[in-house]
Image 1 (tube, rainbow, N blue to C red):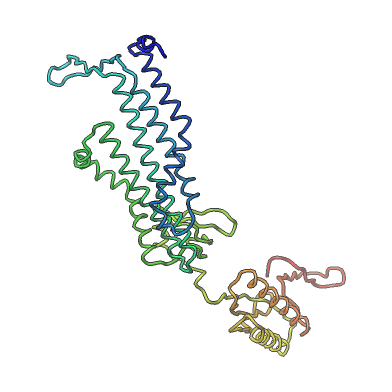
Image 2 (cartoon, rainbow, N blue to C red; image 1 turned 45 degrees about the horizontal axis):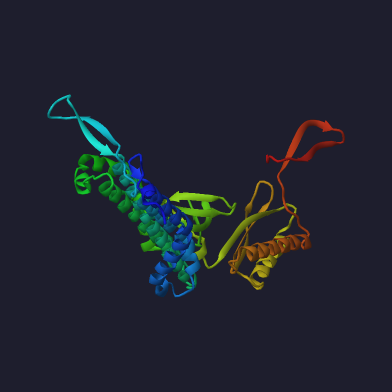
Length: 390
């Protein structure tokens, strides 16, 4: 039998029994917090099991085990500390408006301060759990969206996730003001007045970008995964957020464009094109006669129109250039895959080179003729290749 007199001994305002209860509750919480957090996570998962329709319990537990563990630890610390008495009081002085500069003391115990601190931390952990639940719901919705062919839901789910998490953060902020700091939230919101207007004006661009994000979802000029070109930036849409849209460029860099710019500027959705156009001009030397030009133009046009993967091929003698005879060539590639497109374009370019060589012609390049007043060696003039054209 334990001696009750030993447990009744008092040190710093608390008995040995109080200290034992403090240590026992704290030790119990530290040992079993991981077990209880996993157990509570699995119990919470049962509420969402019918919603998920898949075995997502591991993902749910992985998301919630840390915040629930933190909540259990804080609750255990709070219960254990409450087993002790805190006789020490701190006097907080303030100036009374009615008495002028006379100081008025308000006694505040250490226990009150501890209660406020733990209330603050526990509210934070509760809203952390809510945010993780939102993460899980978005995880399940993204999985369901990946099973459909429609990409709009792939774009909508991350947006709604950010929206609800932002709302929860605002609610958590005002909850802390009301319960921990005892601020009258309604009076605070009502009293914003001119300050609220100033904040709204300062946040004008953010509001415009937010409206732009809703416009993108309603008008659907693109969805996640589309290849677009806007303001000189070309790349694949990866995410549409509150304020901006993220684009993965061909150089594998991440470009962030405000949503307002996405809807106000000229945007090309390259994924919606049904053909890819190729157009360019080549120059033939002036030594090429008219009959050869006709044959070259005809053979190029016939080859493009007769091969697979191309359509609407055209080749014409366009103009007399400074250095050669300009032939304009244009056609459409019906295969949208970029690798196949590059392969087809290369094959056509090589065939054009062969056609020109077979017809005893050559590609023109810029030349410059220098004329001298006296003979240079045996020649009165000579022709020199140069980058400039006279």
